[in-house]
Length: 512
Ligand SMILES: Cc1cc2nc3c(=O)[nH]c(=O)nc-3n(C[C@H](O)[C@H](O)[C@H](O)COP(=O)(O)OP(=O)(O)OC[C@H]3O[C@@H](n4cnc5c(N)ncnc54)[C@H](O)[C@@H]3O)c2cc1C
Image (cartoon, rainbow, N blue to C red; front, side, top):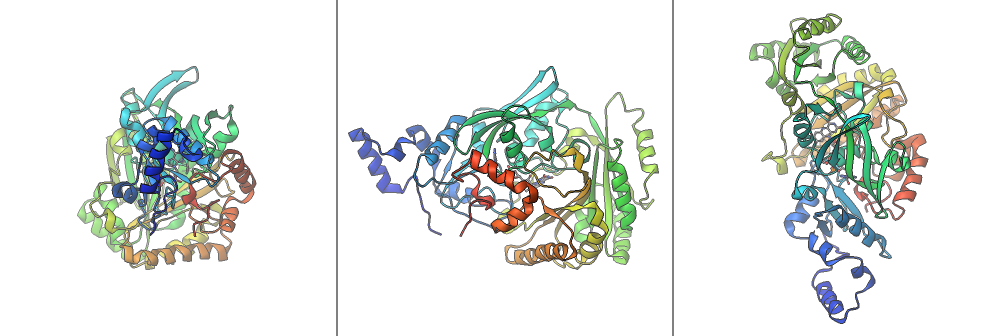
């Protein structure tokens, strides 16, 4: 693919700049870029290769260059220089590039490698005010580092993602969900304040009370309104240990009734579910808990039933509650209807629990795999229809299955509807993550499968919403946002009127 370079069309421009410097008359757009910034822009093959790929390994857009900022001002400067041009160039913040459909890419524009902001030392600071403890975190920071930094103070955020090698800015641009979200809401519900550089290059501090339009817009805003450079996140006293069980069900009604019962109480600290569709999908499950003899019993049950469901349940404790945790856990389990012989216990430190997925980023096969994921929120009122039509009828027939399928309910009242994130219009909805892994040449099989699911929902009138959404047309985005579209569009015009930021989401920028 051609590599258009609006900022540095290579040799000719270098000569031009030298010429301008010599005669002291810089042109209007070179004026906009200081020498300092130019030194931080790179277009070597490694920079371009990294910026044109992501975890999905499905979409590759080639930027003109990559900015490696050393300070916030570098980003402000870049955005302002784009605004100053008659034809602005697009800019995509790249946290960790763990999107799966090119959302942190730009064709021909500039990718901002957020990670380089932390090169001058960690930007994680624990603090306290009259309202309680918090941590100020650079938008480029990883949640794993937030975990380690805060637990040193005996404190921790209350809401997480399953995987912690994700950037704070990238997850807050989506929502950040996991098994704690039923109780504390997604990560975006636990943000007190943000520093944001808007699409006009203005540096703005915002919160629920101050510049609230920007605050609510940016949280779940898919990078459309500004680049998050700092987030202030709520901290609570960190428990030290996690008592963790996995339960197995063959009956969907029992499984969903128990999950919904659990998320209606404050008894557990974490509730998720996993779908077991074939031998491959039991691997991850098995590695944590069960022995090989359990495994063969589960495999024979799976053969009979075609699909099994598993609840993953955690209660935290510390020295003060260690003597009562077993009793409390038993009380919680007593109310559930899992298959009695399939209960698997574990007891680990809080850090081991939260960091349980480990670091997947050093996978030597990374370049050989694609991740054609589909993430959905499904309204509870239609969950039985969804189970029958998709989970029972379609999922076990997917012969190529290799991946993890996560499925659990969430409480809508823990989400703030003023934020940009979109959820179904019901008190309880389920999150389904179909985390497929495939060879590049087979990714189209999964794309087709994902589309079949979306079509099934459309035909059955099940009003699902995509999480980590991916659409190709503006009409689909308008439908996705529904009644929120007007405010979403208004905020775009207010904070990024030249449509510069995060073009890879394809909401306001079509990619030909
Ligand atoms: C292995 C794996 C596990 C995951 N597990 C979970 C999970 O449990 N729960 C969950 O909710 N999600 C999960 N995700 C999805 C993840 O939260 C999103 O893909 C998130 O965007 C990843 O963060 P990132 O830093 O890689 O973002 P990127 O992919 O770099 O960016 C995502 C979007 O945000 C924009 N952006 C990036 N940084 C900023 C910033 N500082 N300010 C404004 N915009 C910015 C980008 O331009 C882009 O549009 C998982 C993803 C992977 C690959």
